[in-house]
Length: 191
Length: 301
Image 1 (cartoon, helix red, strand yellow):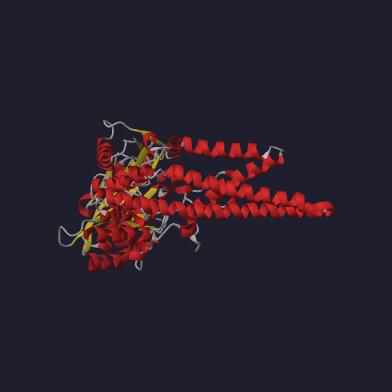
Image 2: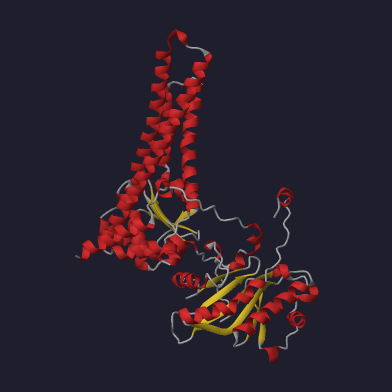
């Protein structure tokens, strides 16, 4: 935001940054070797279900827009109680998840919905359960940074595990440096 | 890894230092203005003491207000009340009032002019992050502040510092009036006034640094008493690790609640290499953990 925008109180919508997503498969390898965490086979894209743009508010329209065949592509569209929609993608391969999340993002940006994108979430679970607990990697689309989120209950998170994930992934991923922005995502519909 | 865990927010320390300094300077300016306006030295001291006293007398209300805390009954917060009850019985002290602040930042404080007018308060962020044992350790630390009468001690300490500054200025003026003699001219008076200002600022700053140092020792003392009270220094150490440093900064707030604020984020405070520990009211986490470790060894040995 420039000085002029500040003076006149204008905010420009922030465009999402998508390219950093492709660093994820490398990070997944590190997670597997260091913390024994593998992909859960699920990734989610969270976006605001805004009013207006009436033709794109219904689920069927969105599915059509994203060009997914629901049965064949194993995806679902759910709403949460905070007014956000989740596109959940199932794919056993992390590269496949990244490609499809990126694809969905690009489509939404092309249709002018980029501002409504909030974050992408990738699930990681212990390869040999119970392990140390599962971790989600949250990608902040506006900032282009990742952070780990390891919920252990309704409103509890395992900070120790999250900080360990950070220590292993700093080389591979642009990790969000400001810890105050490692916001929680309670009841995230991505395993 | 261990190193980043103990990383401090130096920007925050700097801001706290500047805030504290601004507070002291505000006092200095008020005193200076009053003296300039021809109010006598005695009245200035009375006004200064009055300000300090009200700060001390209303410390509980000021702290509760600034942390957006409110008092809670045992029915509302049975867990917190039970822990405080237990600790007060153990320490044989009157039970203070108990408050809760809805902030997500993990913090606790105890304040009040005397043990019978004290209030101990914890934030929701603290209660969410710690288990019962750790919460008990933190509250034991806070109750030790009450038992040590730290509000009174710190008020007197800062009062003494201000008095020192005032006396320094008076001495300079005295020297100015007596020593100047016949040869005084306009330029000399300006120079002397500047020197007086400078001297009092230096005295205030030194007094401020000493007050901060005292505050850090009081924290260590409260750590020690708190740990001895619950008999488990390691639990307090674990609580400190969970609420200070990196872990304390990770929020519990949901990303979707703050989505609207995305456009307004501010850059993190500049992380300059300042002598932060000199200026901060709390000792560094390393110092506190080292003391608790030693205590643990002594208690087990």
